[in-house]
Amino acid sequence: MKKRFIYIVFICLAIPALYACNIDDTNSISDTVSSDSSSISNGDASSSSATSSTDISSSDSSSTFSEYEGFDGYQYPVDENEEDYWYDTGIALPIGVNYHGSNLLENLRRGDIIFEATGFYGITGHVAIVEDIFYSETYEQYYVRIIEAISVGVARSIITPTRMLQKEGSAYRIKDASEAQIDEVIEFVIDQLGKPYQVEYAKSHSSNSQNWYCSELIWAAYYHQGFNLDDDNLDSPVTPRETIESSLVESIDL
Image (cartoon, rainbow, N blue to C red; front, side):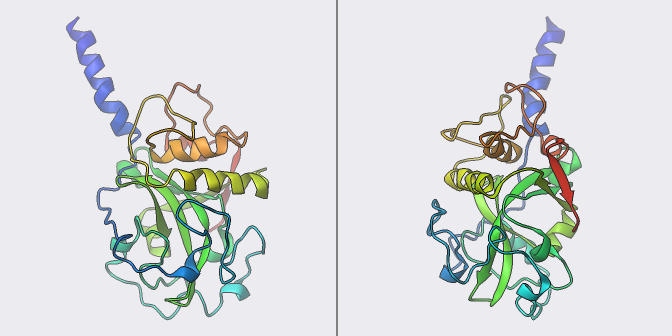
C-alpha cells in the first residue's frame, strides 16, 4: 500500500513537470506596447479575416531575399535585453529586431512549428506555431510572429535570430498540408488566445477547451485538419518532441 501511494504521488508530480512549457522568465509587454496597426495581418486579436496591405503573407507570395532586403531590421543592433521582449508581445513589434544574416524571414511561413530544445530544462522542449510574417511600420521592418501556450496563457510572441540561438531552436513543417488547412490551423490557435496555461494528462482537441499547454495546442490545431502529430491514443499527453518526431513533419533548413 505504501509503495502504491508513493507511485501515485510521483505520477501527480512528474506528469505536469514533464509536459510543462512554462517560460519562467516571461515578461508580459502586450499591455505596454502601443499598437502598430500596419503590423497586424489580422483585423483583431481573434479574427483572421482581414489582412493589411502592408503585410506579407508567405501563403500568397514566395519568400525571396529581395522582398526583405533593406527591411530586415539591419539597422538595429542586437539588444542585450532582447529576451525581455520575446513573449506575450500582442499585435505590435515591441523593439527593432535585426534579422540580417539569418534566413528566418525567407524560410519560415504560416503554420510552421518552432521547436526550442531548451524548453523545460531540455527534457521535453517547447513548441510554438508561426502565425505569419508581418511588417511593422513603426520599425520599418518585417518580423516573425508566433502563437504559443506559455505561463501567461496562449499568447502572441516573436521569434528572433537571438531567440533561436539561445533556445536552440529549429523549425518543422507539415508535409502535405494545403494552404486552406494551414489557414484553419491558424484560425484555431487565434481563437484560443488568452486561455490559461495548464498541463493535464489527457490531451484535448476541442476548440472549447478551457486551457492548453504548448504541444497540446499545436497538436489539436492540426488534429482538426486530419494530421495527428502524436502516435499515442487520445487519452495520453503529447510532448513537444513527439510533435516534431512525427512522420507527418519535415525539418526546415534554417
